[in-house]
Amino acid sequence: MIELQRVSRWYGQVIALNDVSFSLQGGITALLGPNGAGKSSLLKLVTGQIRPTTGQVQVLGKQPFANQWVYARMGYCPELETTYDDLTGREFVNLMARLAGIRGAECTRRVAEVIEKVGMNQAADRKMGGYSKGMRQRIKVAQAIVHQPQVLILDEPFNGLDPVARRDMAQLLLELAGAGCGILISSHILYEVEHLTHNILLLHKGRLLAQGDIYTIRALIDKHPHSIVLETDKPRTAAQKLIEMESVLSVALNRQRPFEIKLETHSPERFYADLPDLVLQQGLQIQSLYSPDNNLEAVFNYLVQG
Image (spheres, helix red, strand yellow):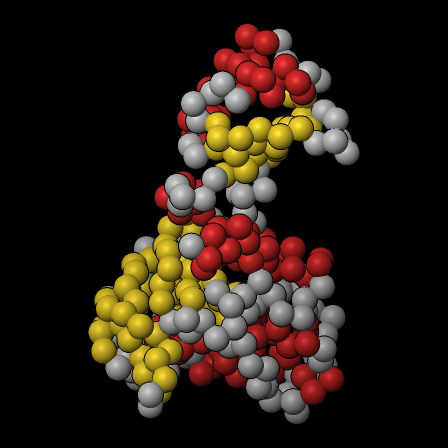
C-alpha cells in the first residue's frame, strides 16, 4: 500500500530523511522515533504534501503529491490541532465528508457512525472551540475515516487521550485494520503502540534503523545479550543447571527476591526451546517467566546505542 524507494528529503542544508526505503502491504505499522527523527517529513511525503528531493514515494501504486485519486482513498489525522472553532464537531466531520464527495442521507449516516465510533456522541453538537485536546483528537480521527479510506495515516493519534479513550481508540484501529485498511501510526512514545502492532519502522536522525517484527529485529541484535527473568521454587538448583546450557551467558540470583533468577542469553529461541526439558528433568516449578528486552523501548535503545 505504501512504498518508499531510496527517498531523501532536504530542507536547504538540513537532511530530514536520508535514503529511506520500505514497503508496507497492510495492517497496522508503527513509525517510531524520538522527536526530530524525521517522522513528520516522512508523513508529509506519504500524504502528498511535499515531494521527495530524491527517490520515489508511492501510495496504492501512485505518486501521492497533488494526486486527487490518492487523496480520495487516504485518511489523514495530523498532529496539529488546527480546526474550525466556530463549527461543531458534527459540522466539521460533515464538511470533510462532503469534501470527499459524500452526499445526502449517506453523508448523514456516515457522519453519525464515525462520531459514535470515536466516542464523541455527547460532544458532537458543541463548538470545537470549547473542546479539550482529547476531544479534538477524537474528532480529527472521525473526519479521517468518514470516507472509508483504504490507507489511514495517523500522526501522534493518542496525544491528549485519557486511558479509557486510548483503549477505545486502539480497539477502533484494530477493527479498521481487520476490515482491510492499511494504517501507519507515527509516535515517539513506544508503549502507546506496543499492544497495537509488532510491525515497526524505527527512524533515527533521518535514517531507517530497522523494519519488521519487533521479535525478528530483536533476534538480529546478537551482540546485545537478551535478558530473561524467571521465578522458581528451586532457584539454586535451577541456576546451576541454567549456567550449563550453551545458550546461557550468565546467571544471577536476586538477593531481594530469593526465588528470582536473572539470566542473559545470546540465543533466546534456543533457550526457550531447551527450557521445558530442564524444567521436567529437575522437577522445577516456574512461577513466572518474562523478558524485559521483549519491548519496543529495549529494541529502540539497543539499535540507537549499538
